[in-house]
Length: 210
Image 1 (spheres, rainbow, N blue to C red):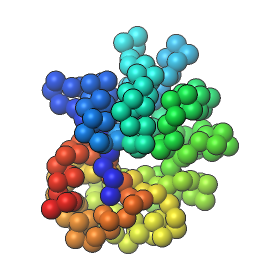
Image 2: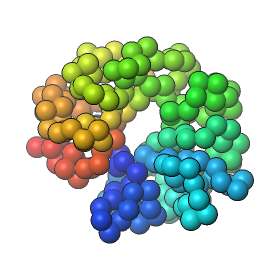
Image 3: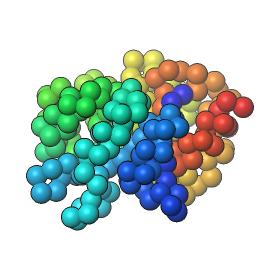
Image 4: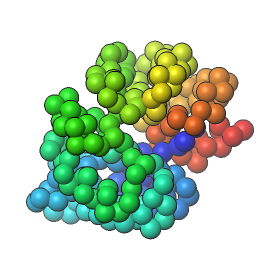
């Protein structure tokens, strides 16, 4: 299983979605998930509506390309209509191991038609993934209950030839250990198309290697 950091590898000295958090994540060999918007006709990194001090996306792309452009990049789309700018930036920096997710359904269709790699999503409140046939993979989340996210549900997507990225429970303020134990005990973690997004990438990696 491949571990991605959530909004970079952050702490009190490296804020979420900062260039320091991304660089630290890449230096340790972890890909990342982060939030993309547009501001003043350019791509920026920002979970909330951006301001003038939002991190330009080019800084993230440059840091990833400089360290290891093969590390996975999960692009959480927070604004519609980013396809042209994103495609241009990804091509310019030679970044091919990426996927887009969380956009609106009409925007997802536009992304797919533009030839971009898109993940659909499935969760405890979204049991049926949209545009499943066209999607490169599935973002699997559990907002309130991890138990619906069974090994069998994950295997169904992997067996269908989809990549899968799991949301680790600590992103929702729950203990990660029970879910991590279920994954480790199943040995599904050996699958090369399985990823997990975590606030605790080093702890997760150590847990699954133990």
